[in-house]
Amino acid sequence: MSLLRRAFLRRCAGLAACVAVPAFVRAAGSRMHDDPFRLGVASGSPRPDSVILWTRLLSDPLNAESIDPVPYSVGWEVAEDERFTRIVRRGSTEAHPASAHSVHVNADGLRPDRWYWYRFLLGDAVSPLGRTRTAPADDSMPAGLRFAFASCQNWEHGEYAAHRHIAASAPDLVVFLGDYIYEHGPYTLEHPSSPRRGSQETVTLAQYRARYAQYKSDPSLQASHQAAPWLVTWDDHEVANDYANDRDARLDPLFPARRAAAYQAFYEHMPIRRGHVLAAGANSARLTLHDRINWGRLAQFHLLDTRQYRDYQACQPAHRGGSAIIDASCSALHAADRSLLGWEQERWLEQGLSASPARWNVIAQQTLMAQFGHGHAAPDDSSLRIWNDGWDGYPAARQRLLGSLVKHNTANPLVISGDVHTFYAADLRPDFTRPAARDNPVIATEFCGTSISSSSRAQTRTEQLVAINPHVRYGRSDRRGYVMMELGPKSALATFQALDDVKRADSLAFPIARFMVESGRAGLTPLT
Ligand code: FE
Ligand code: CA
Image 1: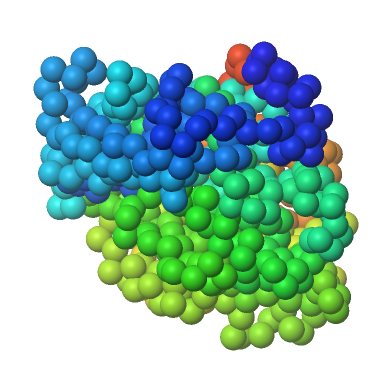
Image 2: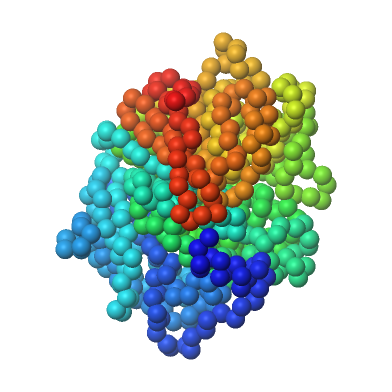
C-alpha cells in the first residue's frame, strides 16, 4: 500500500472522518498555487479527426470539498512529438468554479490514425503529458486494434496495480465499463436522513467531487489515463448501489437530486464529449452516455448505458428497491415491455447493429449478459434462480438484443462486460437452457472482466456455478485485473490479465487465460 494511501486511510478511518476534515480554503481572488494538476490529465472519445482532452485544476486532491471561487484560463497544446517541437493545435479555455475547474477540450482538426501528445498550462505550471490518438479513417481497414477493458475500482479494497500494467502495455484504447468510484462508506438501508449515512456515503455534489478527487489522486490510475484515450460508461456505484433509473434501493424520495449531483460530478471528471450535455434542472438531470465509435471498418463500439433508463428490478419485496437473487418463475420478470436500456436506446442500438459496416461489433456495457443460474443444480425452467439486477433480470430485453443480432446478421458480435468482479468467458445463444440444440447456435461471444480492485466471492463457489451454467466456459473470481483484447481482420484474442496481489501497488500481472474468436464463427476457442 502506498504511503499516500496509508496516510489517508489512517487519517480517515472510514470516510466519516474524511469528509469532516476542513477543506483547504483559499481567500477569494487568490491564485491557484502549488501544483494545480495533481489529478493528472485524460483523453477520450476519439474520432478520426478529434479527441477530447480533460483535466481538472486541483492542488490538494485529498482535501477537495470546497471549490476555489475564481475562474482560471487554462492553455492547452497538442503536438506530434513528446518534446512539443511540432505543436499542431493549441488554445485556451476557461476552468470555471461551477464545473469544479474541470476542463473539456475538443481537440479537432487532427489527422486520422495518429498518436499525439497533449498538455495543459496554467501560469508557470505545466501538466503531466498525456499520450492520445485519433481513430483510423472510417473507410480504412486497420491491421489491428489493441484495447484494454476494465471496471470496478473500489479504492478501499486495494491498489490500482492493474492500471499500471494497462499503461505499460500501451494499448490503443482503454474501455472502462463502470464503478469508477464507489459511493460508500458501508452501505446500509437506513433512511437517507440518518447521520450515519450522511457522514459515510457520498450524497452531495461536493462529496461526489471529493470522491473523484480521492480516486484520481492515484498515480497508477493517472498513468492509465495518460497512456491512451478512454471510452467510458458507468454502472451503479457512480451514483448509488443497485439504483435503477430514478429509484434507489431505499426508495429515497430525494434520490433524483442525488442522481443529478452524481451525474454532474461524473461529467466533470471524465473525458467525454461536449455533445453529452446535462439537461438543465437539478432534479431531473440526464447525461447521454451511449455512443458509437468506429475503428475504421475493423471495429465498431456500441457503448451502452444500462442504468439511466432501465425499468425497475422485477419481483422485489414491497417497499424495497435494489436487487436480489430471485426465482426465475416470477411472472413479472418476463413482461415483454420491460427494458434494460430504455426504448430509445434499444432502437438506437438496433439501428446501429443493422447498419454497422464493421468486421467486429463490440457491445461494450456494464454487466454479464449470459444467463447465470445461482442454484445448486443444473437449471431448468422451473428451478432457475437469477440475480435480478443484471441482464438475467431483463430476459425479454436480452432476447430482443440477441434477436436483432440474428435478424440483421450483425458481423462478429463481441459483448464485453464488468460489474460482477469475476472473469467470465461465455457463448451466447438465443436459448440458454438448451445449449446442445441444433436450432440454438452460438450467436455472440462474451468476455467479462474481473475488477481492478473490488473484492469478489470465493473461487470454489464460482466453480460450482460455472459447472451448472454450461454456456459459461470459464469463471475466475479470486483474481483482480483486466482484459486485453487484440482485434484483427481474421480473429480476436482476449487475454485475462490477473494481479499477483491487489494489496500491492507494485504487484506483478500475468495472463491467466486466453481465448480466440474467429471472424465468421461465433464462440470461444480456449488457447493454452
Ligand atoms: Fe463493482
Ligand atoms: Ca456494479
